Each structure stands twice: as structure tokens, then as C-alpha cells.
Image (cartoon, rainbow, N blue to C red):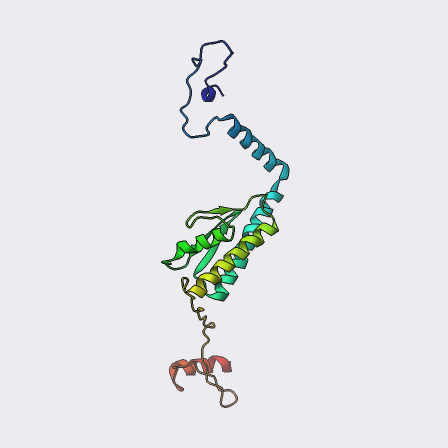
Length: 196
């Protein structure tokens, strides 16, 4: 610790350091309250174990899952991405009135900035997660009703492609893929291999 705090010090002694000090910069570097808070957090993490991380990760996962499903169902151009307890809303396309959405969230008691990540902590429970989800859903509905948030059309998904095959006309005949003529060398080879 000498390199961090300048070495041993006694009251009444000159304020010169006994050893060279490593340069630090920042508002709360070496501040006693910041160090005590950091120690308290580390002890809390140690006491709670992995269950604490799983709980806050579960909150973020639930929020992302519910809101992403809601956005898809109402055609809102937004998606929530998350990792562990960190989550962040993203626009899926440029929104000229996107900033207005975050003012609407603030009006509902959720204060987050556009472009900044959000976190769930051990202080957030199911009630807080539900509160945030409700605020997002209400703000989305109001923005869409007022015409400030465009409704996306649902994307059409094609079923996996299947090869078209002509129905067999007689017993022993081989169905031919579309685009293959009956009697072609490819068809004859297929018939010969099936008769063996």
C-alpha cells in the first residue's frame, strides 16, 4: 500500500511521503467513503454467492423477453438486448422522434437515457421489473397512437423449401424432380438404381 498512500504516517510528522506515490486521477480515488463502499459491495457479493448474479440476470432476461415479444406483436421498431444484469434498448431503424420515447418513460417514472446501458441490481425485485415493463408498453402504445413511432409490418417467414416431385403414375415408376424430363439419362439412372 505504500505506493498508493505514500507510506506510514504519524500525527505531528511532516507531510512529506516516505516513498514515491503512484499517480492517481479521478474524483473518488482513495476517498475513504469510496473504499468503504467498495469493500461493502465485495463482502455482499461474497456472502450472496452465485444466486445474486442469477437473480439479477433473470430480471434482465425476463424484461428483455417480455418487451421483445411485445415489440414484435405491436410492430414497434425497438429491441432490448441484454447480458447478465445489463440491458439496453435499441432502435431497429432510425427514429426521428426517438428521444421523445425516453421523455415518455420519465413521465411514467422510469429515468433512462437513450444510448446508455441500464442495470438491474439486487435491490430490484419483480415489482420493479414489472413497473419498467409497464412503462415501456404504455410509452410504445402512446407513441404509436400519436404517429411518432411507426408500426413495422410483420416479416413474412417462408417455410423451408421442398423439392417438388411429380406423383407416381404407375407401380415401379420413379418420381422425377421438377425440371427433369422423363426419359433423360438422370431419370434412367434413378430407375435402374431403384430396381436393383
